[in-house]
Every structure is written in structure tokens, then in C-alpha cells.
Amino acid sequence: MYINLKILYGVKKEMSQSPEDFFGWFLVLVILALVVGAVVYIIKKKLDHRNDNKPTPVPGHPGAIDHKYAHALEIAMQFFDRGDSALTDGSEAKLDLSKGLYDAGYHVKFGFPMAFTATVLSWAILEYRDQMEAVKQLEPAQQALKWITDFLLNAHPSQNVLYIQVGDPVTDHKCWDRPENMTEKRPLTQVIASVPGTEVAAETAAAMASASLVFKTADSTYSSTLLTHAKQLFTFADNNRGSYSEKIPEVATYYNSTGYGDELLWAASWLYHVTADQSYLEYVTGENGKEFAQWGSPTWFSWDNKLAGTQVRFSYRNLKHGPSLFFLVHEIKEWVRESVTYKEGLAPS
Ligand SMILES: *[C@@H]1O[C@H](CO)[C@@H](O)[C@H](O)[C@H]1NC(C)=O
Ligand SMILES: *[C@@H]1O[C@H](CO)[C@@H](O)[C@H](O)[C@H]1NC(C)=O
Image (cartoon, rainbow, N blue to C red; front, top):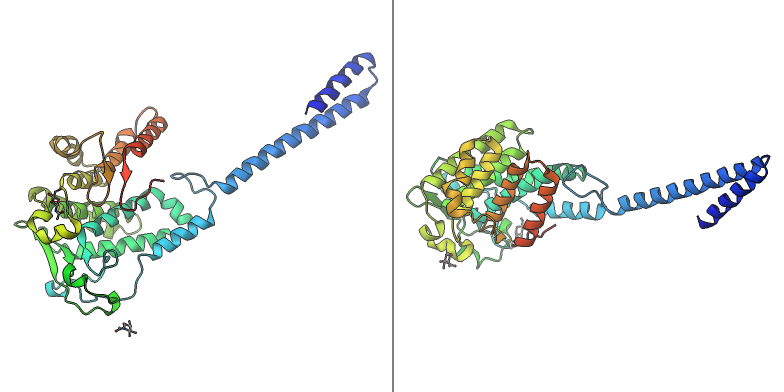
């Protein structure tokens, strides 16, 4: 570059002295063209290289696919697969509870963390749908979600009855079979109006409401069934307040709930998102919000505490029509990143 400029300068001086030196001008133009060409080429090369290594950040349109991560996602999705097992689960109540997820390495189906898993999986699908589709993982993700929501729908046979557990954790913890081979009895646990479980009913409502959004276009009948159950369960949870950990003390050994206020707000925020019904918004921002939300100071996000998630969901709603959306979203993300400690396997991106 430096040398070329010198040539340009030198030739220009010569030009004023000898007007017939068109060859000099020609040389200058050729050199200039070469320099500009080289610079453009180098910049383009650099940009291309950057795109090769860094897929476009999500959310947004799917960018370049990093096959390493696409493969990791595919393997993670297979985590939800198993062979046939516990096909008669639920039969003592004449229900089909053969689907759903076992907990950790056990064979117990714990409704509270299972519903939370469904809600978070729904959220992931809603947020990253295009990216999942681009790496052919949308279908497996939706199937995994439906495997849980099929169970949850069957576990809610009437308005004020929700089955929240299949299996006996005490006998199960002594069982070392594969679930495909187990022969243990599979007792059922339920919450009803007189033995309520507000957090588990509200979390199940959140799971169904969020899943109804996932299936909205692909299967509108299934989606509206989910929404109907979600609304009923939310009403059941709200009208019959009580922690399942207190009403059914055995559950406290495994998935003890430290309170149900967060699940009520979380469920209402999902229901508001799905229905745009102002009453759900007022539920969260009114008295219940004052009592439970701890706005501005979320601590962590887990199967037991959804306040941080509720706040993030509400930030979407409040910022939707805001003046400087990009800036505010960025601020909120930073704030959440700083103030929220992700627990139980949910790593920050
Ligand atoms: C477990 O079930 C599989 C078939 O699903 C069978 O091949 C195997 O022998 C069984 N194992 C035991 C210990 O019963
Ligand atoms: C369950 O949580 C409640 C509320 O935080 C607490 O008082 C109780 O001791 C916990 N029970 C167990 C078994 O951890």
C-alpha cells in the first residue's frame, strides 16, 4: 500500500511535466485496481472465514450450521428414547400412564419435575424452532414433548384430579432392573381439592399451556385440548391452595417444594402468552405478583423456583412494543445473566 502510494505520487508529478505520458496513468489505474481488488478480496475472505467458524447467534434466522453442535443436539434428543416398559402404569385408576419420563436413574415418574421438563422443552422449541428445524431436530423435540404431554393429559382425568406420581420411591430405590424388566408394584399418587398440590398442578398447567403453543399450527386439535386442560388445572391450583410437600409429606424426601407462588405466576404468564387474556396478566402484576414475584431479585431458575423464568417471559411482553427494543432486550439479558444462577443442568448460553 505504502509503495503504491509512492508510485502514484511520483507518476502524478511526472504527468504535470509530460502530458503525453498516458502510459504512466494507465499504470496507476492498473495498480489502483489491483490494490482495491486485493483489499476487497482480503476483507471478503475474512468475513467468510468468520461466518465459517461462528454460526449466526440465535434467536434469529438459522445461520451456518456447526455440525459438531448439531450432532450433540441429536444425541441429547435421543436421551428421551427407551424401549417399551411399564405398559400397565395407571391401570389401577383405569388410566393409561404408560408414557411420561422416569426420574434420573430411577423408575419413578415424578409429576412435578416432569412437568417442568416439558415446560422448558416447550420454551426451547418456541425459542429455537428454526434452528432445530435446520438441523432436523424439531421433529424429535416435538415427539419428546408430546410423549410427556400425552402422559400429563391422561394424568388429569377430571377438573380437580391430577395424578402426580407413578411408582413407590422406597421400593424403587432398591430395584436395580432396567425399567423394561421391572416387576414392582406401581402405586399412584394424586392431588385433589381436599389434598391439594398447588405447585404441581400449576406447573402442569404451565407445561400444557406452553406445549399448546408448540403444537398450535401442526396439530390445532391437540393444541386446544392442551389449553383447555391448562386452564382447568390453573383454576384448580389457584382455588385449592396448598403445597403438595405439606399435604403429601412423602414427596418432600424427593422433590420438596419450597413454595407454590412462583408456579402460580409462571403458569399465569404462560397462559397470558397463549391466550392474551388480560385476567392472567392482572393475576401476575396484581396482588399475587406483589405477594410472590420478588420482582427484580430472582435468585435461581430450577424445577422448584420459576421466578426468574416468569420475569424473562414478562420482559418479552413488556418490551414487545417498546421504543428501543434491541437495547432493552440486551440490557435484560445482561441483567438476567448477572443476577440469575442457573441450577439443575440449565447452563447459561
Ligand atoms: C430383560 O428383558 C429382556 C427383554 O426386554 C430380556 O432379554 C432379558 O433376559 C431380561 N432380563 C432379565 C434379568 O430378566
Ligand atoms: C421442604 O421445604 C420446606 C419449605 O422450605 C422446609 O420447611 C422443609 O424442611 C423441607 N423438607 C424437606 C424434607 O427437605
